[in-house]
Length: 521
Image (cartoon, rainbow, N blue to C red; front, side):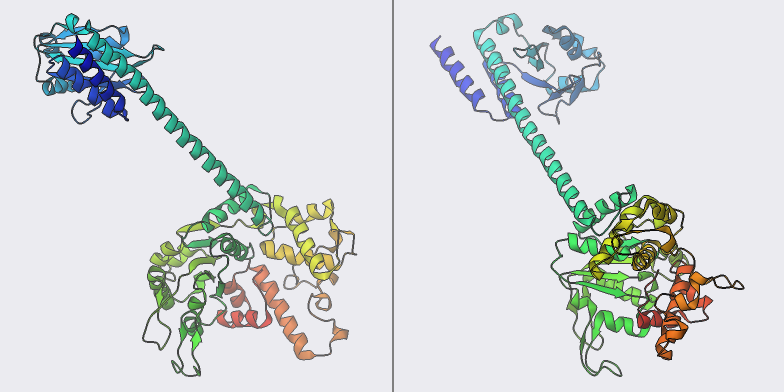
């Protein structure tokens, strides 16, 4: 009796010391094997769904479907009562998993299957005792067996509760992290709403995507029609990123001639080419620690595209005329209004560069697809005008907004800003913008049609009236800029089409746009 008590205490201490459920089950089965001379003992755990029994040694015994009545485990769990299973009966069970357990048990003469339940009646799992000549009733009636089983159930429940608590803590942490991320996203989107203005679903989604893009190191490709605000999106990505304190270097690939673009990007040493009187730092080097924004990337020459691809892969570049390579840690954002897929098919744009640029693609919807943003954008531009000029309109009337809603805006947000600012100029301070001051007609009439009073040359914005001209050269340049601006508006900002319609090479048009500070409308 003293020896049995001593043994029981030792076994109990060993069970209590186990700090994981697999360790507890392994210890308990080992104790039962040794204490009652069993050939094998298994502890099968019932999962939370109550549908599958798992063995602690999955590589040995496997899993058992509790709804599969081709093995006796399902019957025992269903009735909640223990049962004996003879070897002769077990041979007739055509179940691969059970036959595997039989083999690993040494094919004993008899099995004792006993479900284990907690005090709340919840089934935890099952004990499978294996022996050749056991007296099952004699074993299960012993106090030592009952004590081991009782302590096993108690510790099993404790382990499950501890595991549940850990799971609950992890779930709570995950939920709190999710709430924190959602709140951070909301706050940053609210910040962006001051520049990326609009309450349409498209703009709400765009702001969220900008915040996500800013939080990554992926290259971003912004696509959208001319004038829709791709440069504002790029600025938002930079300002929301961890590089906000670094430089944002902007390169307009369409405005710089091919012969100068490589030098502008990579820089050059003194004497690298004719006219290189001194060394010049390239824009890639200036973007170190910040963001490099390549606007109108679709206009980049093919020869330079291959060099840019290598730079994006290694962040290494060599200035013109230099022997050694330099490193620049920049984040790339590119933008284009051109359909790059067509450029790839036409052989004007490298496919591999496209995929390298568009790791995080963004699309900015044209204004005609989000007319619900017209009011917010109009009031935003009125506020900017008033802050810049010191006075201006108070707001915009509902009739004026209705008029704007009926216009297609080929020049997108940039055209809306020009229209609103011109209307502000013609609206008394403190009043609301009215429909009669909104210039929604083309700058010039169609060929063959007379000019109306509202579009006659003497009222063209930026061009002095005929009677007011004092500098013919300046007036001519202003008139030329007005024609280019109108033609760009007519072709939706497509410089190639605008240049062809004016009988100009595209590079010449780009030079004039740069010279006269004409932006794409």
